[in-house]
Amino acid sequence: MRDLMLRAPGSRFAIHAAVTVAIWAVLTWLNGSIEPQLSYYLALAAMYATAMFGMTILVGLSGQVSLGNGALMAVGGYVFALTSMKWSTVPIIGVPWNAVWSMVFAGLGGVIAGVLIGALGARLRGPYLAGLTLGIAVGIPTIVNRFPALLGGDEGLKLIVPYPEGGYPEAISQQEAAEQVPADDAFLDEFLVEELPADSATSAPADSGDLLTPEEAVSGVESGDLLTPEEAVSGVPTDAPTDAATDTALVVDVPADGVDAAAAVGSDFVLQQWQASVAIAVACIVGFLAINLVSGRQGRVWQAVRDDPVAAAVVGIAPAGAKVSAFVVSSLFAALAGAVLAQILTFVGAGAFGLGLSLSLLVGVVLGGRMSLAGAAIGAVLLVWLPELVDTVSGDRGWPDQITNNAPNLLYGLLVVVVVLLAPGGIMGAVSGGWARVRPQRARETR
Image 1: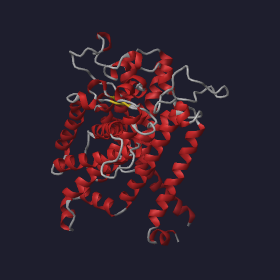
Image 2 (image 1 turned 90 degrees about the vertical axis):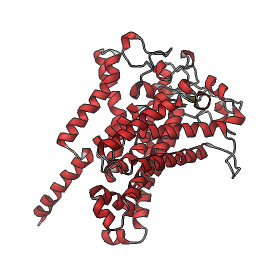
Image 3 (image 1 turned 30 degrees about the horizontal axis):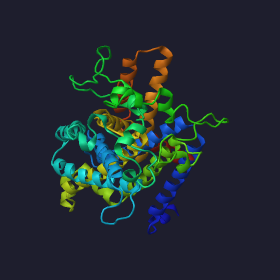
Image 4 (image 1 turned 180 degrees about the horizontal axis):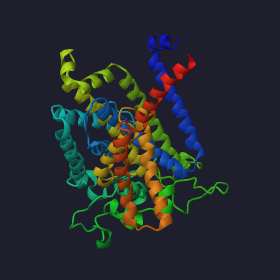
């Protein structure tokens, strides 16, 4: 009966749609039931999962290596910021601009970048392809500083979140946005630390090595514009009105179209829950697209080219085209994740999309299981949870900041070594292998 249902026309599509809607409903309910800080972590996990679905297709199914997906996230983040801040209507169509259109154009920017990079890397394999993507990971954030008037340079671009009524051009100028919206540096502090040039005015102090402080990570933003540690977690100024029952901030002190944000979005608005809801929706849409691609004909094409390009070419599959298509899909998902990250941070800057982010995505895929979309989701949770575990342990034991900042990277490396030696397929590979061994034994016992 089960096989008959799966063979019915459109049955897989319907099943995947039902599962996606169920996951979205559960996560949305969870987002509305937890504290704002946990909603922030949920948003980060959903953002990571969005990018890592593409990494699973690129690395797991098509067998290619990428060290540059963090830079592709930068493409999506900057396209989202620039279009939302500079365009008030959709080109050609002429309808009013909103954040959904910015997300669409961010995805389009990712597709264009994926075509270009995929065309360059279609004939490369192994370390040569890794070198190409590594150069992209290092080069794209550096290009940002070459165009400070357009891309904000070291200071980056700040966003109003949620998207203001009527768009940025009509509601508020870019200069006013930079003065009114503090950059949320919690993510930068926990996950991304970048090196500054030696002659930079904001270079790290001598006693902290090459690592940046949270203030330096946002590259030149005055400390007066930054959130306090408490505000970095909540995303809301400490003097904002709170609910006496829950002791959580209910309004966001960000003007929208010249009026108080509370009047625009409602007095019960919680920024972190809104950000998490956007991240969850994008992750579910991307996951739905990914699972249909993986389980369909295109997924079999990618696997055939990965296993034996010559045999695939004999049966009529173009290996180069299959590799480019994997890059395009991965780049699309990465760009959408970058747009989500821009809304989580309310900031777009080179420091948020450095090489560390690209390596984190690859580590997450290896840990969760590079052949499984569920493994990508597990890896996303690990990338959010492990730094928090390190912070908790370091706080209890009084470790210095330099050790705390580098401990997650050390832990990632150790986990990758353990996984490669003991479970090459990652967590999901180990689970699938164990279940495959248990099923025959259970079948023999029932006979």
